[in-house]
Image 1: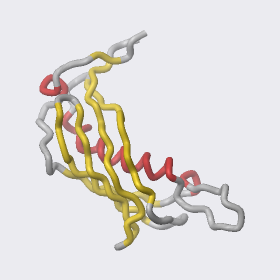
Image 2: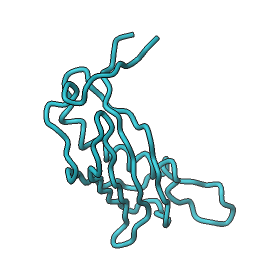
Image 3: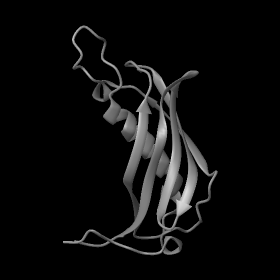
Image 4: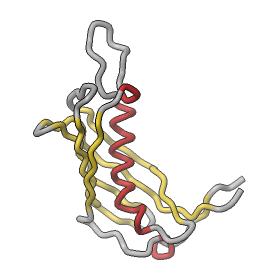
Length: 133
């Protein structure tokens, strides 16, 4: 069963995405986002949770522009997890379009707590047209 099919980027968006487009979101670090596997250390934001919020924020640039039936999927990620964030801290995420190559949009992403960068890197979302089951 095929769950998506290729289309041109112009058929998948109602408004073009261009380098420099950006969005910001904030997340509170909750219990479900924490690690607990390092004995004697406090639980901190896990790397998978960091990646999720970086990728989700990047997708926020695209979601309001989707044409009917369009979506995006994460297809590449390169992230440095630089510092911890503990439960209750607010993580601010910025995603900026770096490049647009056909249906692939690469974003520069940064996550910070106050003036401390906790993660940064790039994520790529690829535009798709979902098909029915």
